[in-house]
Length: 399
Image 1 (cartoon, rainbow, N blue to C red):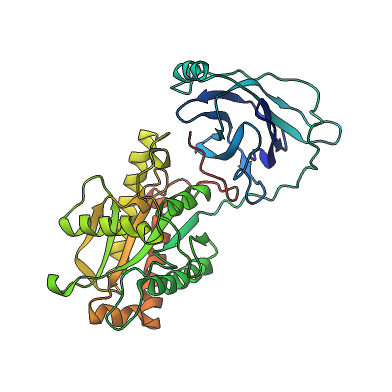
Image 2 (cartoon, one colour):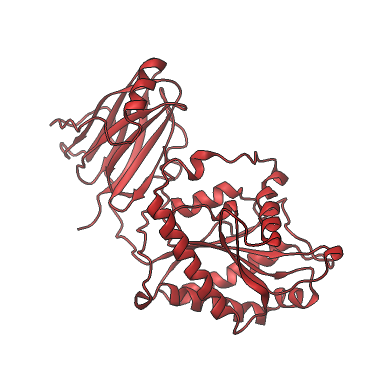
């Protein structure tokens, strides 16, 4: 059976009372609860396909500052409203389609006080208690938005390619002037074209031009698009005083770096946001609020498997680093439910690697090897990971 489709969402109200409305193609169960520090309302529903207009949730109204949404686990979706102050859920219910209006999910909020909200938040800390659905019969006439026709699901795995750096962040720079940001964008573009030729996968890129994308947004991008695989693409450099190094390296996420070089590289990549004046403080809500331990362990296992497969394919056409598989705490790999690797194509500080990086022939051969690794990774005979169904750009729904 196909997933319910959410076609529109909006918030109306003032500082005393506000209402969140989600248009659906059929009624769903709803359960909501409040959280404090910061103030939020969490609404849990069965898994739906979010097909909301672009920009939905970035701004709110009344008690709601903004909202985000997405799948939190197979079979379950979540909507999180960021509040302007303490509030309570007065009603949370679903409506059948009626009188030419679509089925709707309605959450009615009212202002509250900090002590009450904190007490309720403690009671709901494990997200297992909350409001039971209150089903009413009549459609709410407050907001009449015509239903939108749903597009068929595209069940092909979605690959997110992440060309590193961009904009004012050049990344590493070769002595002859080539910038990492340009080299990796050229490679990612060739790789996208190569992957798409098979027709088996959907491919999106975190950037397709010379634009700076913060690291946290790259992670969010992968989760918003329900990516089945995330490949971040970079090129390294080694200062002359530290000797010479060459070859491609494949990194996976680890709490502890596999060696000093991996730790140093992760630190420099993680600090890349400073170039654009971004706060480098880790936001716990970015990766830690609703981490499901089993999901995280499974994701790391899939990431490791893809890294090994990628190494086997790449070594047939490209020079690999003497230690081609490494791990470190790269922020860009911290999507807890998306298998992710960071591919360093080579060293711009090495003349042979740089010659390859600017070579169309090398780029095509290497892109072919990466594509072959993706094919092998998703081959069901090899225990391929389950495809995450994408409903379009769904915002990261973590409390």
